Length: 251
Image (spheres, helix red, strand yellow):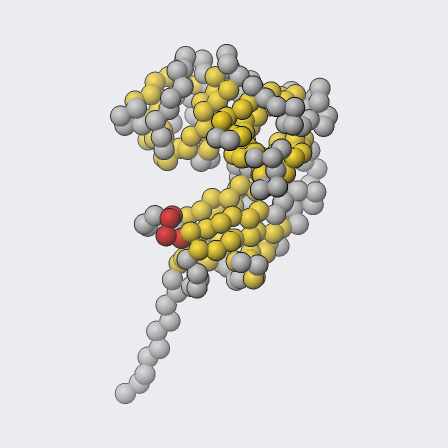
């Protein structure tokens, strides 16, 4: 009787790599992946989706290294990712080796206790809020240009108070309606923008870095971060502040 060998491959983790300054997926070419400091092999499905199979650990430190992007580290608990596809999204910051002629502006320094650093472009009014159903978590938009809204992280911006509330888009029902991950608490008016967020990086040592694309026009951004669980905001105009820092505090 002929013996048949069956090989099975278990998908343990899918990692979506996103250029946080553009929202586009990143090719895994020339990238290295480590788990608890040890290199691991991975597959790639499409642009920016890493596939990790047959992992021996359920909890580990994941590290992504690339010549084009800043190194990123993340503590991963596979059991905490929920049932279904174990998907993790990582936002990568362009680094000194980023190819091409793209220009960037950088906000960096050391601020003990900093967490959850992000920013939205000031004056981005391409998409506005119209209604919100807290029971169904459905957000109605004024989206005249039919933007795809294909990023995950967005913000409800209050331009009057100079602050914003971050949230995730779980899915789009149509180009004017999205499902959010949480109930939005901001009291809004119909001119409040819904804007994509650029994510920064921070460490336990207080070092932080946030980088945005400089497209040659106005370069003013509303920055949000947390200290001791409290959200702080500051508007940064990179045209007026060539080397800005958050150490001076925020409102």
